Length: 185
Image 1 (cartoon, one colour):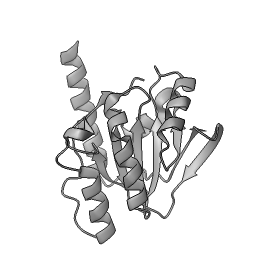
Image 2 (spheres, helix red, strand yellow; image 1 turned 45 degrees about the vertical axis):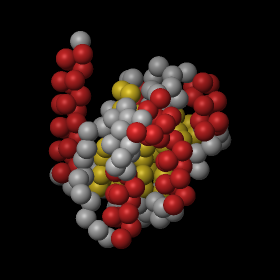
Image 3 (cartoon, rainbow, N blue to C red; image 1 turned 180 degrees about the vertical axis):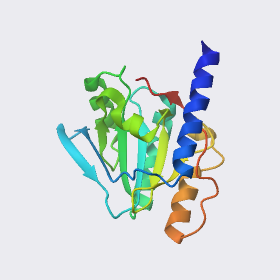
Image 4 (tube, helix red, strand yellow; image 1 turned 90 degrees about the vertical axis):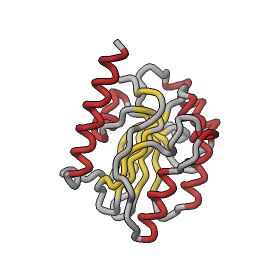
């Protein structure tokens, strides 16, 4: 079973790489879902502004360990519109609502029933990050850092990408293998 899970993951990553490498045939400039904390359906749009879309979990320790860093990046890089997406179908909405209200992220987190947003992006794990340019085209997809546990990280991929986009520099790698817990569809 583990072998097949790895094979499927590799195939999905390869397909996602093709999407990033092809210049994004379908730009994304908004997501829709129930916004945690506001308890209402919301359309979160970033048209004309670069964005960071990060897939999060209420139960994954990898996601939890990166949450404070993601919150700090959102404050340090105000040019970017940050949005969190919660796609795990095995996590009860009330548990997730309590978790996300307690984390106090400085950006909205939306619930993704049916993992439609996760499928649209090709998100595999939590945390899985997608950086979009001001046209909604993916310019980076992958992990936040080089470790599934933030405290053990030595390379901060997302921060490097945000600095490159901010300064007009080159993004070293547009796609990296995501680290963390699998999104349960």
